[in-house]
Length: 184
Image (cartoon, rainbow, N blue to C red; front, top):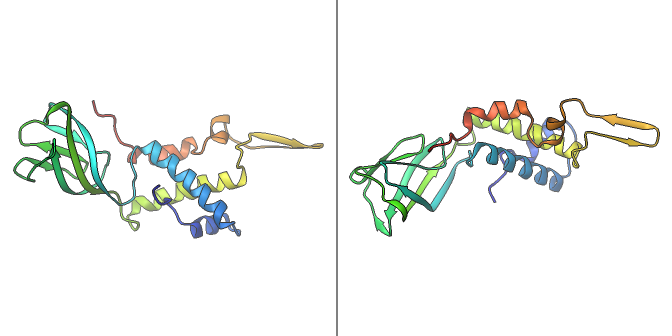
């Protein structure tokens, strides 16, 4: 499991109250998972070893990233390729073959480093979305839109989808620029 996109201390500072560390970690993990799922990639810096891709028969293959830092190894059916001779790559995650990647079930295996460093300004925005979503999970863990106790009732403002979702429509909008495009 990947580390949460924000630390427990950020959640406590954001909510301006003491938060049980175990509860905070669960909420941050859940919010981080929702963000990574929505964006389609990890966002934070990580080293990936042995990612298998299916060849397209075209010159380009796309890695699941918008910020590729390095390509450490590429092989086709276990045969190592040489960078700048057999392939090149771009920062936005594109692997470009000198000729064409094999088509179909033949295995293209890639090891690479990608994702933003913690001090990257894009990660500041991601941390903000993470703590906002995690804070809602702590305040309303069952995602109730409204509830009653005795003669008292309480309802949350916002549309029903935002009240019950981990990420609100506004938070998704903030993350849209970090979402992987659909490549066909």
